[in-house]
Length: 171
Ligand SMILES: [Ca+2]
Ligand SMILES: [Ca+2]
Image (tube, rainbow, N blue to C red):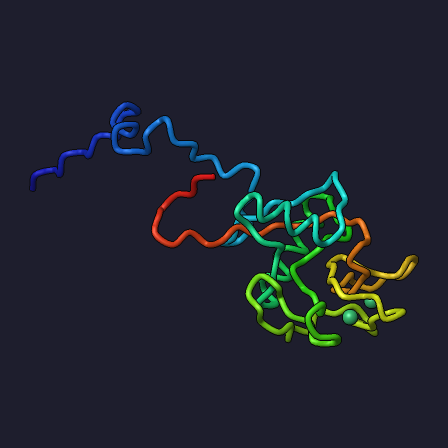
């Protein structure tokens, strides 16, 4: 029986010719891939919710939304693993209708059981923007989602839209 010929490795220059033109920037930076999504995590600057949203929009992204508990766990675990646990703005808000929190990025109501204890509580009737990573000081509970006043300066996480046709992402 004849041995099948060994398929040669594709050389670097062939890869290059098959690949993406060099003038295209194929790096995903400053977005990081977590699960099947791409995120920008602002860990230095703190902004109010509106400024944070605008910063995401300038990158073609939105503040982060959660449509599954798996995604919620994945992102929170990432923050723990990379040692950047803190309070971050999400796209959650009830600015349009008091008490009805939605993900502003897609208009879907927040139905997941991810709220921190006794929240959303609309404290002093001025809490309309939702942060993740909140827990009361000196408490050992797992941090959760909390409504906070929208002018409170916080870190934030942007979520890039899922690529629809391209097999790679260009920013
Ligand atoms: Ca509210
Ligand atoms: Ca609250």
